[in-house]
Image (cartoon, rainbow, N blue to C red):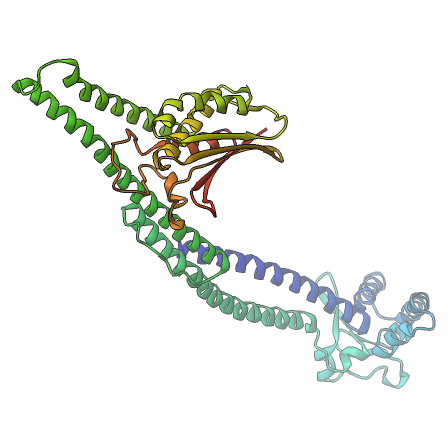
Length: 463
């Protein structure tokens, strides 16, 4: 990954520097040519072409002053048209751009025209020949053009030399920038790769089953966020694995007792200790019913966890359904001398719910309240509308629940009183199922300790 990242940086650097080089060279060439055209080299190209045409036509330089006079007149007109009052024409004249200020010599270097008539017939010096522009006709030098600019020391190949120097300087700057950028790319790549590599190693260890991995990630904010997410995921997986193991142990524990009772009773029947009558078979039936309830409760929870719990919703009168469920508890309430109070205020809208599943929630809550309410106390149910929800509060008058266990009571097989086993016939899944069913309806089920004692379970169902 480090190599690929560095190669990607290199590709970006090369493209950027290549673009800069092309643009810089084109711009430099344009600017140099424009400068020379304006200030004395390159502006003579047209004049040299005119001189070559003149010589080709006349085969000598006689009368060339007429050509220069004509060219000078055109140059004056162009200068005035380009910038009257701005000095544009003056700038060209001062730099040697006026044809009449040039010197013309034949192929032997003998001057045939000069602004100073005294120079006519003289020979160009060696330095003047070195800077003069050759006039060629059919590949042969037939004369020389000496401008004030070239006479000032600019060589004939000044443009190409200047552009070559500009290109070399630009290339050197690009190489230096490229090397620095590459070094920076390697540093940045290492800063990114190092924490990513640590994250990868941690993820591999997590995949191998080591869920204790926690990564101390430093680097860019995005990588730090990724590391924190990985740590959260590892912690979540660790909790899930812990819950899975606890659930497996709890299920084994819950199954062990009824199976042991059944085995003991069957062995007693086989050995003739118990006669095969209804009284001897009753414990077997009770333990078998407990196992059936446990399996059905586990099935309900697995469907709810997978989001596959089937609900047959229709308008339900929650108050009427509450009275219906409490009727089945009247014998148990009477045996324990526990009174049941149901209060509701005004008309209440119906809820869209599965009546069988709502009855299951209420049954589990009442069964739990009956289990922990002392003899002679009461269980209170209050129904009211709360915004877009119907709220049912069920309060017992037991000893309450430790604050740290208020949310744990909805975990599978959790018991606030660990000394209770199967004396009450409970599977330890009632409250967990009740909460899952409430959530499947889009509602909630919570619990809190009442200030005056006991626990209040609050069921909210959307209207």
